[in-house]
Image (tube, rainbow, N blue to C red; front, side, top):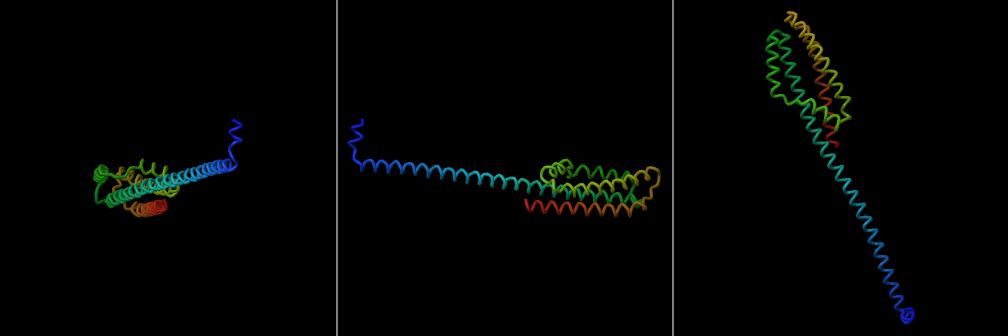
Length: 188
């Protein structure tokens, strides 16, 4: 074997070394190309994941905007009907019948609103909590009026002004929430 190796001239050894060096450089090039492709693929997948997450978040926030808009419409409907009771234009039973009738077609899903807020819009929770505070104040005035109504005090004129003021604050809080939802959806 040693004799065969000695019989090969130096030019052949140089050629073989060149081929081996070329193959080694080729392998190193393939290694770096694969590493670069893997890095690019990972970056592309991360970009697609972020784009998908942004798209889902935007869609959920758009849904939330619509749900909150329906909720606002429900508040206006209840407000208008209760003010008719406070003015003595309809009685409480008619008001409740109207509310029950409207409830059959209600498009407001409070659980869905809260779910979307807690999963996709945590930054909206402080404004949402303000809405809930104003809703509680509206409900408080409504409950006081109802208690007086049950006692036979049918005239609820004294509740009209505070109810209107608090309801306006509630409307403003909901509009602020809608604006924040729109801004968040735009930037998602």
